[in-house]
Length: 316
Ligand SMILES: [Zn+2]
Image 1: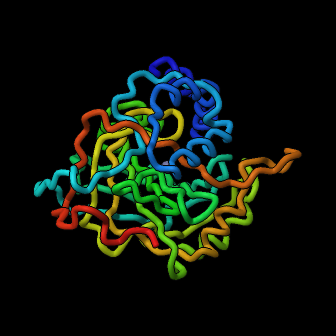
Image 2: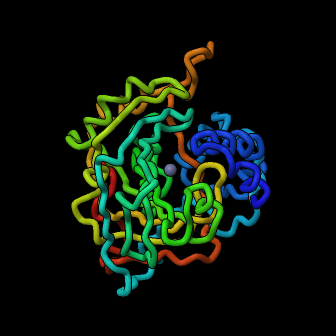
Image 3: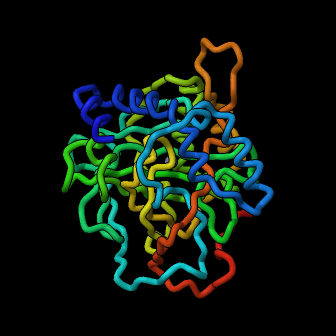
């Protein structure tokens, strides 16, 4: 990875991401073989089969290690309450929102991260982290779609707000290769009433229906996508769930899901993995990674898990 970092460092940021993705996609399959574990749930089996269809997961990927990969199942009973965990502090400036990019696997809402205008600190973090993008993972129906699960419960979608450590590093591309480089907030989506804050984004999505399309998107405050109760979360050390799969991530998974309507998720599903030129168009669905073994890691909670057997806000 050091060599890869040196090769791509001089390139422009978006090009870097695409190049890194292209190199690593071709090496993905091997790692998947190493790290994937069988899940006893029928839904997991079908999720595994479905996720293999995307080109990103069809080729081997050379990533060293593999002891702290993501996503995982969060066992409420086994998570450890840590009274030292502080409330999260998010300071997002909607003016740093720049564009939406269909990268062929999800859509990324990208933020200007050249200054500390949109930041995250507190919680399990000792440093300040800068928001660079957020994206979602979702299923072809409402029965599955999230990457993380809580006591094996699947949500129809999961939001990831990706931040990098601006105290220790000067670029996302540097932080993504390093320990303690990234902090990702995960928020589960469940189907219910329409999410008014999300609707502005949903309305813009038809413009990025095809892979590689980009549209300007401004003045969007991602704080509106966080649940009301932001102090209750789980945290653990893990990895990116897309190439380069580096084990640089402090995960912060919110306990309370947000509600979105079936119609809003339907717009996510109307996007395409494929570019306009491709003959066979493929719907952008099931864009999640299979779950990974915990390998002795501890999941800490910021709250006392008094309900041991099920999360109180499970999917409908
Ligand atoms: Zn993600």
